[in-house]
Image 1 (cartoon, rainbow, N blue to C red):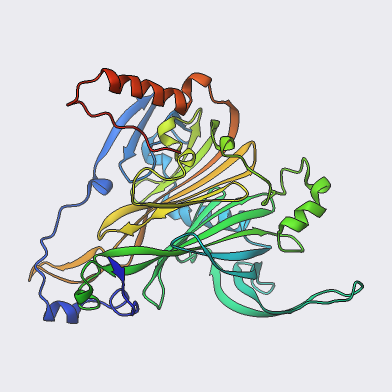
Image 2: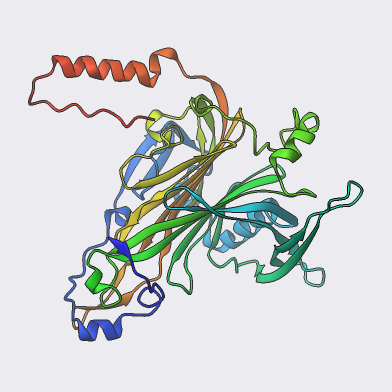
Length: 425
């Protein structure tokens, strides 16, 4: 599979012309189990219905909203109020200064740009929030010890938001997802944001249409969307852009301040492996918004401790400062895949955001039993975890001990038996 050189044709436009030239008989499949199936389980006096959307399994949880399942999900009429409240509480009224770093498919740094995202209330209309991007387009370095460097900036208006009109943005606790959305180039972007104190981490994943057969490029629907690059940014509502030098100068000031995350501190890999507990906010198409208490996270749910992901289709990067990003290498048509962001703002706090997305879902003409187009990509489910350390992991539960046990089982097993070892961290 390789990328087409002209990616702005087929993914944006409908495929009516293409289908007429290349008729494709597509049989309408029944609704996916991710959307239709559900199961019920009892926890105390709670009757919890788990919709099988593709999110990490939530283990050791307890619902902390109303006992009546119909009342657990936020009412649709109040959903706009909840979303607007989360958006204004955690993101609005700040100037998010940071360095936008673009990574290639191989993880190489392609570009770095100093920028600021302004999310400010309109003074004339308090219910409208204006988003502007202030980009540094040029700079002049001073060789005088008494002078300062100067920067040339350009302000780009992006959007105006108001209650009920957040467009593709959805908030969940301190997390937010923007997208998936289609750009004019034909690429699809999915943005995840986590906020802590006066700082936040933001990542955008870019996927582009791809074909298995190069002769079919631009002539048939894509065989999938392939990951091409990612952009991440460490941002803070401060007077200066967060940098390693700035943190060194303010080292004494930042010590003990939980509201000022240290983006460039060293984070050993063992910091991810602890007993974590806290709260989880989930949203689904059919379940709406729900809140959960996480008493202690199970190993199956601790995907932040598996930086390479749970399958070979996961692209991942562990970045300095306790940041982990994961996304699918290829998104097949009409499938559900996960985009993830985990962040350790300090050694005792873990934040996670997880978005389930779907794309390339065909539009079927039932009368002629033909595909006439593609539906826009959509967000299927969202989860945000706010966790704190509950102690160190027991020695008996370490990965090394479990691997040794599996090796012993493999030595005692028959040749026909298959022992599947977990992926190395």
